[in-house]
Length: 113
Length: 116
Image (cartoon, rainbow over all chains, first blue to last red; front, side, top):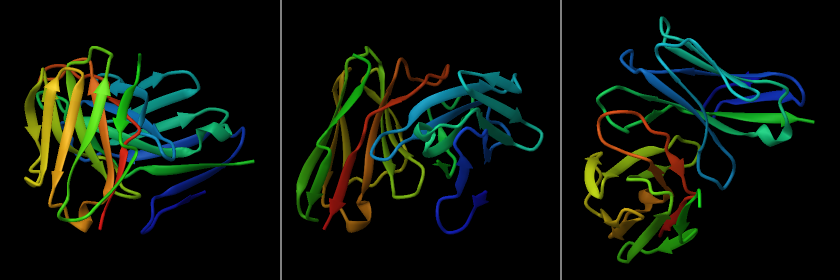
């Protein structure tokens, strides 16, 4: 389940299940989005990106969905593994604003054995 | 070489000290970035260098002073920091910078800074 509060939102899933991590982005003019994974003690690692002219993009075991109408982004991880445990951030960017990506608050994914 | 390296990994400094954080990449990237990340928070952009020129300064206090000696190196000079500046400082690089196009940023492991 998912818990939200003063701490980082946490999503707990059983190993082997699918995970869905959600992100509400702030700027309706944003047209490029990235999902990052940050493991403890490491910097963020690129997972997958999507441009606003698409509503779905698939990678290896991951799928990103974009709903521009409600400014919502989701990351789906298939067959979640212990190595997927990390904090996941979405980041948004707007054409003409260069490389200034604004990161969302993040969600901690905890994979249960 | 496909990584961004940062030194030191950890740094403890007093409020009157002067120290520097270093970042290096050998991927031929022409844009480099400094981010600040507080515990349980997302990274916040501080500075962007594009082709060795400062292109973005996100209203960062002058006690943080970036420097880009060449396209592979990025420094962050620290002076008279405050305890609230304690955070993880992340460096990143991307193939290009500038206003046009969007480029994946590759992050280093960060320097964890504690200001006493």
